[in-house]
Length: 148
Image (cartoon, rainbow, N blue to C red):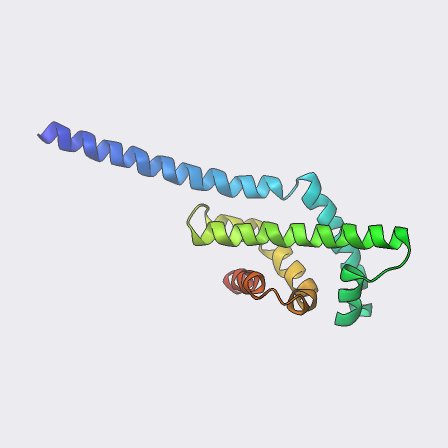
């Protein structure tokens, strides 16, 4: 009976160790994805907007992302920008949900991604608010508040 109890404790410890290892791996997977081509492209777009941030009103920022545009090349740029920004915020929503459900180490991701996230969130907050997607904005604001 004592041996059976010891084996059960050992098995539980192994399971806990595996769960902890998986959480660390999931955290590092998010950090690897930060350098993926789609997020690199999105970051490039956000940097371009950052250079113009002081010149853009919230309305101009919204128009830059949402349009309307008439010419094909302007429409393509606008759609690429919009897709990139949505990709970026979807990524951060996934991080927030992963933290909430204990799939990752929130502190590890905070160390790695806090500064870029806070900067990106502040830059695009007027656009986020104007889109009227309350559940998305709530998640993103919660992540911001958690990482402040």
